[in-house]
Image 1 (cartoon, helix red, strand yellow):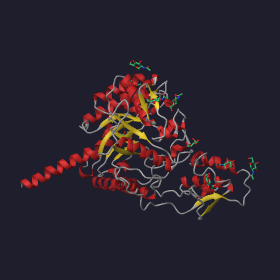
Image 2 (tube, rainbow, N blue to C red):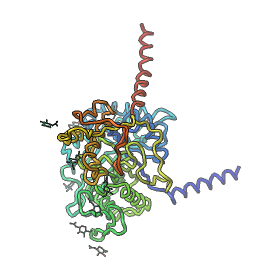
Image 3 (cartoon, helix red, strand yellow):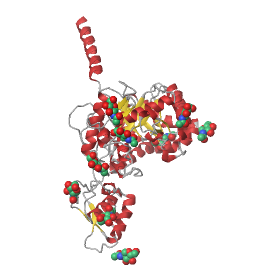
Image 4 (cartoon, rainbow, N blue to C red):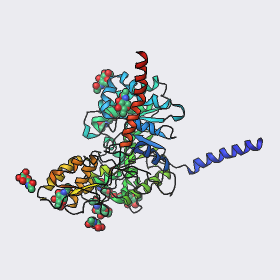
Length: 483
Ligand SMILES: *[C@@H]1O[C@H](CO)[C@@H](O)[C@H](O)[C@H]1NC(C)=O
Ligand SMILES: *[C@@H]1O[C@H](CO)[C@@H](O)[C@H](O)[C@H]1NC(C)=O
Ligand SMILES: *[C@@H]1O[C@H](CO)[C@@H](O)[C@H](O)[C@H]1NC(C)=O
Ligand SMILES: *[C@@H]1O[C@H](CO)[C@@H](O)[C@H](O)[C@H]1NC(C)=O
Ligand SMILES: *[C@@H]1O[C@H](CO)[C@@H](O)[C@H](O)[C@H]1NC(C)=O
Ligand SMILES: *[C@@H]1O[C@H](CO)[C@@H](O)[C@H](O)[C@H]1NC(C)=O
Ligand SMILES: *[C@@H]1O[C@H](CO)[C@@H](O)[C@H](O)[C@H]1NC(C)=O
Ligand SMILES: *[C@@H]1O[C@H](CO)[C@@H](O)[C@H](O)[C@H]1NC(C)=O
Ligand SMILES: *[C@@H]1O[C@H](CO)[C@@H](O)[C@H](O)[C@H]1NC(C)=O
């Protein structure tokens, strides 16, 4: 008996020691679904499980995704799209409905329940390009959601947060000590921080060494990638050896200037894309992730917050998404650590050390068919057709520095045609292009340039029909019974 107790105590001690000595930083992923043919949720959840990813941030509250996640022992962040902020600010009832439909229903299912940790109100609503379209509603919407959670007796387990874009901050000197909030949102940010502080919620922020490098903000590739060879940036007596710490401390300074110097920080989005721009490649992305995770695991923190790194970090992104906006750049559709169909592009240590990444298995595709240009036709007007296709399809890999940039004409036209054809679910007439398209069963991919075949989404369609019947049949039976 006492032996057993002793054993238990030493085991507990060991576990405790183990977690403090070897604990790695909490690293999760953003899982977006802005794709024409998203990987089916059950396949994506298998991918998360197999790779040991237990923190998942979503951009909405899609029921099929939440059902697939139910029963998986992971911490989930639900998202509320910006378009809903106006309604949620003006109506507490709308907030109650949102919480009822999208939270209560899933957390109260016993063993199959979902562990919802955060509700992210808005998706970077303070982006400068949005002007004042969304930010006036943020604090009101967050307050209503918080009150609705309280009513539903969920306020102790679910925290309300607001993901903040990096352009919410400015620094004239380009150095952390000059960090402050953009003046047009300064008042809103102070209200938001007061709200977060009151409810013990952390501050979610995007940090993007890639964008600093892309936008040439005095950021060398070495500095962005945590390389030892990078020239340090001096901020009076503080020395910055990488772009991550520099950005992080700019946030810390802005929070201090707003008089919330202690608030916990979560990195809501950080990543490195792999296509659509020179130096957006898998090997560089791998180097960035290794540098980032090594830095976070070292627990060294930053010059302004030594030994106090972000409490959690969410990588952008789980999968490539061919319908993300490319307003910022063609790389936007290539943030995935996995391809759109769940194949690992490179290695990331999610706590499994150097174990090989696991790919998605048994993914079902459309038929092995591609659409290419018919070389036997008069191609004098073909470029216009391809440009038209690219307005809807994903041609980002054809841009300078992209994986298909140097496939020559008319190979690039075929790439555009195929991308459109796949996105249209291989509909026969979507390979017409005024008679210039041709359907082939020979894979036209070359070297690094992959001509994809899209994922079959018919499974999820049949499931949706099944789901409908689950409701319909009892309804019909009830009606018949009542008659
Ligand atoms: C947000 O909702 C409140 C309460 O209905 C309202 O008084 C306020 O004007 C709304 N805010 C904006 C910016 O419309
Ligand atoms: C629940 O979330 C989904 C997806 O974000 C949204 O479409 C729906 O409107 C939400 N429910 C309510 C009652 O707002
Ligand atoms: C932001 O608001 C704070 C507090 O009201 C003020 O001290 C600060 O000067 C403002 N900063 C800017 C950039 O407007
Ligand atoms: C750019 O960074 C370097 C450090 O690598 C620094 O010496 C220089 O002053 C910075 N330039 C500007 C314009 O901020
Ligand atoms: C930055 O600080 C370090 C250490 O104090 C010093 O050696 C270096 O010369 C400084 N660099 C610049 C550009 O001021
Ligand atoms: C890519 O990185 C290399 C090495 O730093 C650099 O020489 C090159 O200019 C970069 N290309 C672009 C487009 O930034
Ligand atoms: C190309 O477009 C022009 C202008 O629309 C048209 O007149 C011409 O007939 C087209 N050529 C072919 C081969 O389709
Ligand atoms: C594209 O360019 C790369 C680098 O310059 C080269 O290695 C590759 O062979 C080229 N591919 C084609 C199809 O020309
Ligand atoms: C394909 O390449 C040709 C010749 O370089 C160019 O004129 C055309 O714009 C390209 N089309 C696409 C869709 O990239």
